[in-house]
Length: 164
Image (tube, rainbow, N blue to C red; front, side):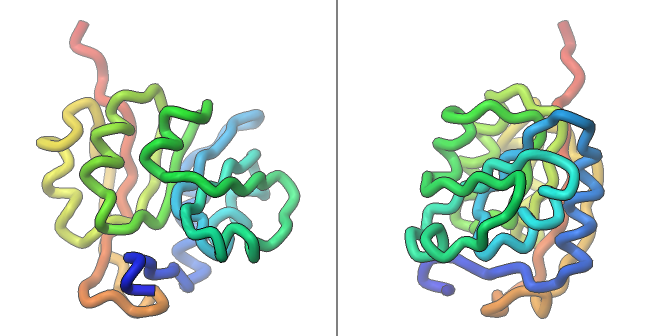
């Protein structure tokens, strides 16, 4: 729903690619922000425990039951402080990108994979200097329902090496 800044990823190949790019190891927990209808959760749950965070009450109530997935109604930015996780991912609402990445920069995470607004990744270093952009690639706007006005980007991030 555009009024809630929700554009659901419907391309199954991209969902599977996100799970693969997380490079999940045995015993790890993945925090998924903006779990929506569970398409990404379903792919990740094949390899890890998923804490699926969604702020839309209707989506939480209707979230499909899945093995290895715990869904919670919570704010995505606040969830970074509330839960312990190894890896993090999500199809993020474009309206929370800056506060989300500022907060992520304060956490200890191993790797993150996100869908973000097309040009946002170019601003990442200025917003979250402790986060390293590993890679990015375009995601066509046709991969979402409802369709956003612009294409998005799939980004892979990790912690910057410490200078200490």
